[in-house]
Image (cartoon, rainbow, N blue to C red):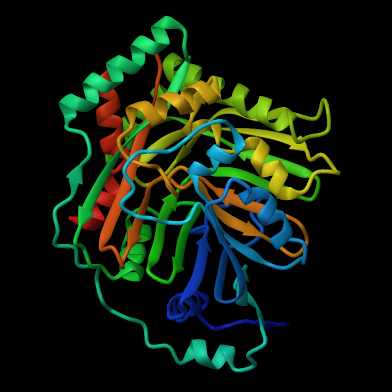
Length: 420
């Protein structure tokens, strides 16, 4: 592929046209930071379209198959399902799955557009790609959703389940568990790109992503980084701790400070930080794991979040898929101890997580990578006419079930607005 630099007069217009052009392909992806400034970001926007080769698997050997796929250095873009856990530990997934995504999918794109600081770097064998993008007429279609959203749990069932989980915590089986519930719609037809644009308008986040493979879509407004590699440095930024925003500035600042000072939220956060530190020791130079930031408070459109940053120096002899395997699934979406928490997740949840609470991201030709956590995301299988999103919260013994339910609804607010 040839790489050229392009400086359009209106970079936002070019980005929007490029996304719509990419979405016309059978397989495409867009990562958008929505102008959030992050010391570890490699671009403002990355758009990829077309397939030169791909891997799609649900086998127990998914990570080794991914290693083989990545032997030839190039862009590789895709996702890792939560249920890859079954090939890492002695676990299983038997809950209902209405989406039927493969557990792992990556593709090497024919066209890559990387936007940084108003300049687009375009890698493509098509010499007319800029003209094709400029000729795109932007759709003005708004997302239309007329179906009913149904919960997998009633509020009463959810509260009862949280209290049963707390009993496991009281007995000492676990310290913390991330418990999630699905909201879904059947016989649904939507314009996925219009839905994604509406979601990012309501909830712009630093790890926003649009992913399409044939009839399967991931529309993500994720605020969370799972794991990134920059040279020899590994970076994980788990989120634990959430509070709603207020339109009243004084109250909003009070809520933000209350989150920072909340002992329960700090306890949840530090438990997961310790879990991430432990995971990173398995794939890092001994003694290199450290906490770069503890209990950082970051603000998004609907919520304030408590985010910590854990870093290390990557084991120089370990391939990238093995590094990810040692840290997957992310601790913020499992609990502690990790394996027992995942066993109880399977017992108490009613839906196979699939891509939800997995990771969506990329490997670049230089050997770096960056993956988000698939949360605050709509998953859609157009062929099955099935739309789904899940939300969850960390359950500890100090949890009040009714408050955890309210937290789930706060996290679902942006998606509910888009679908209302």
